[in-house]
Length: 167
Image 1: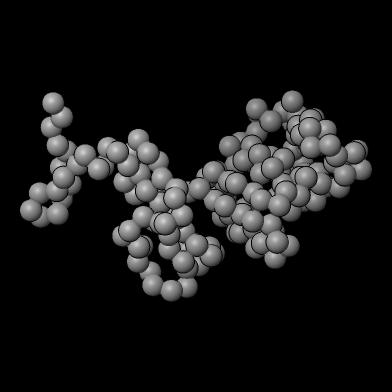
Image 2: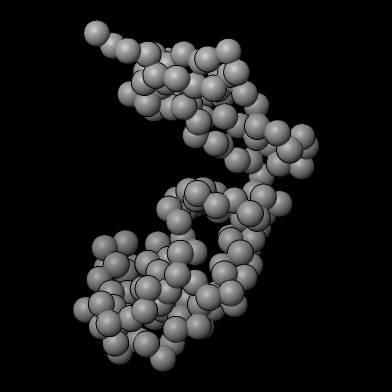
């Protein structure tokens, strides 16, 4: 499918009419700078431009909450900065934006960070102490199987984790 066909498909799935789809397509291809690729098949785009299409179809129906997994993978520097400007604009509109990432070099762009460590989420409010709370969050979110694995582990005298023999 081409970029335009992808917009149409997702727009229809979201229940958008033709004018809404066109407005969203115009806005997002302009903001993310990929207007010139509208007639190209998505599979022939670079990784960064495919990522722009993915982000666009997630945004085109203006959701209240946006869950993004490694959303800036493949972006060039200008698109990376545009992405952060766009998320700031969305947050100002009241859209919740949750980003899953292995790299958090832009800590000041977040309100809160949850670090997954040994199967438990640890909450860090941004703007305060730069350390992550060593205790799991009390919000009741954990990855049970991973947590069980780490609970079966012990530590040596130096505080290093060692796996216990199971037998």
